[in-house]
Image 1 (cartoon, rainbow, N blue to C red):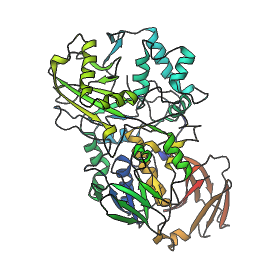
Image 2: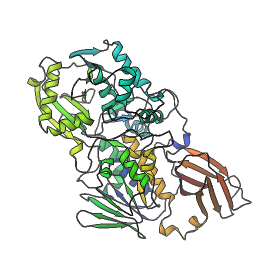
Image 3: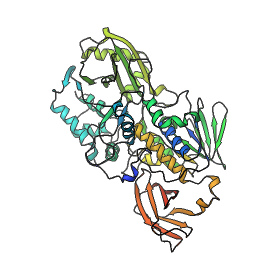
Image 4: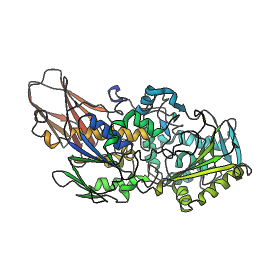
Length: 556
């Protein structure tokens, strides 16, 4: 079962201008030469990508990382096998769409760099645990599997109350935990989304799937994920990271932002970007002064993020089948795949168990005893073949990582109200042009993915650049162009020296152009009617030949 295997085959159009491979689906209209200082909390994919974009524009960045390594949930498991093994993120998503959606810019960037590194997932066979009997697919199939298949296929069409998926399955189909195919729903949907179907909101997951824009195919990498991201994007800003800096407080009340760390160190800057995992925000590990707005604290509470683990098992020989890539199992092991298939030089026989939500919580409570549980389940399915062949194991329990605290965000009830109303939008919104937020949980379209985290880094960099730095306030570039939003109208003023044909362009938080207006050079101001647009964060660009300027606007 591959991620997004049943993804819808309809889409919304994205203007070609906003599918830049280099910028993570975001245009960058500002020229290099900006000045200012920005602190970035967290050296994961979002933080490092934002740092790279800002540094390229001339902004001084300092990245504060709580742990001793960068990458966040992109983390290698070195030395476990004779091929690259990923303790965290493993897949590259977003290719193979049939309706005009662009592939993810991450896939495109890797494909341009070296297409041989991308290995399509799902080209091999699968084993299904059907009432304790391993069934090889193809050729095996039955009507109960078809029902689960169709449920996922049609999931995005749901329209109704944001009830729990488990309740909906029982009320509509009579399927509960006693059903012999319950574990397929848990593995293919619950674990896929980082939790259990007992915690997913039906309306929220439907809207989340509807907003997904980058195709359905998945790929594994024939190289290390973090090393590749360093090569493609992060290399120039790795020297800007300060490690073992556990941030405990952020004060945006003064002229400058002040960030306090557990070791007593204090950092100041013009602006700060917070990219820590959602769980860290839920734990109130960082104190904000002034306190965060109510909409943001509500979003932090609503969006889900659960325990998650990957359990790695190395065997002396392959007992599951040389042409089998994954196994759906009725038990705590949930979903298992063979990460070495097709990897260059791979001879070690490795399986990884992908366990999320309440199953991960239980196995985490057992510590090393989790190995006994998953081995017992494999022995039961494969007639005792697993245990005698076990050579080594490793448990990556993301819930116990002190600066991570879980797997990735998921659409709990209330996460999405509509395609334009979401707790993710509220989580992403800047505060007073000083405090900014990025990370996979802030991604409206591609949460729980590496490319969604990278896109959020591109978005937040544009937001930072659209807010003036103190050194900009008296500059001609800043005084040339002013804009503010009130009651459904954008009020714009500019110095009357622009030439005919220049324009204003409005872009939403997903990098999509939502409005364009020509500049009337006989005037020096204008009122733009945007009452048809939903609340959220927007950037208004003034495009005047080679000159680019922008202002951040929040529609409330």
